[in-house]
Image 1 (spheres, rainbow, N blue to C red):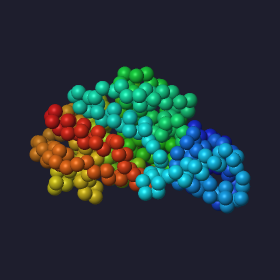
Image 2: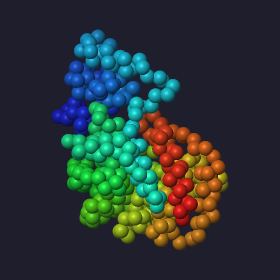
Image 3: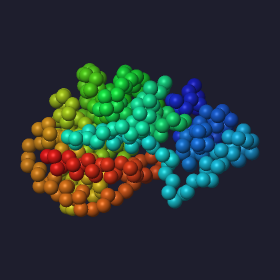
Image 4: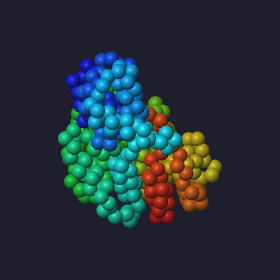
Length: 349
C-alpha cells in the first residue's frame, strides 16, 4: 500500500487509522505522515492506539517532529483514559445516520431537527464523495457510512449527492461494493445498505448485480458481517432493508433472514449470539416486523414477538460490546434508541 500514490491522502487512505503499522517501518516519512494525518484534536486520525504507536516510532528513530504538532500529539495521548477509551474517540455520524434509519421504521418517527442532522448532511458533500463516521478528521469515509447517511438524508427529504458518486467503490469482478479501498473481503451489511440505496434510486441493473452477490453469500451460509460480532445484526438488516425492495431476490433474501432469526430466538424472548442482548433483539424485531409488514412471513409469529416485547420492556438495556473495530466496542447512544424503536414497532403491529 505504501507504493500507492494516495498513501498519504487522508481523504482516501486508511494509513492514519492504521498507524500502529508505522512502528518499525523505516519507509514511512514521519513528517509527511504527521502533516497529513494529524486531526484537529492532536491525534492521529482520532485513534488513541494509532497516535501512541506513531509517537513511539518517532522516539524509536530519535526523530524530532514539529514542536507544536508533537506537543498536541502528546497532550492527546496523555489525556486518554485507558479504562474507558475506545479504538476511536467518537463516532457522531454513525449514531445520527443509524438512528434516523431505525426511527423511520415506526409509524410516527421522531422529528429530526438536531444540529447533528445538519452536520451529517453537510459532510455528505465531502469532495471525496465518502462520509466518515467520525466527522471532519483524517480517516477516509467509507461506503457503508455514506450509504446509510444518504438513506437518512432522503428520509428527512434533504438533498444528497448522486449514488453514482460511489461507483468508484464498486468491484465489477464481484458485483458488489468495497467499504474501503484495498478491502479484501467485501462486507455483507455494506452491500445490504447499498441495495436499499440503489432501490431508492431505481437503479435496477446495479441492484440486480448486488442482490445476486448477496444471494451467493447467504447460499454459502455467510451470515456474519465483518463489522459486527453477531450474525443477528446481519440477518436483522437483511430482513429490515430488503423486505421493502421491490425485487424477487430481495424479497426471498428478506424472508430467509427472518426465518433464520425466528429459528434462533432464545428462550427468554430475546436474541443474541452469546446470550440475549437489547441491541441484537432490537435488530431482530425490526427485521421480522419489516418482513411481516410486506407479507413475506406466513406462519403466526405473534407468540415470538410477544416474548420479544416482554424481553425489551422488562429489563434495562445493557451496553454490550458487539461492534468490531480494532477491538470490540458498543455504540452506546444507539442502544436505547434501538430499544425504544423496536418496542414501539411491536406495539404498532
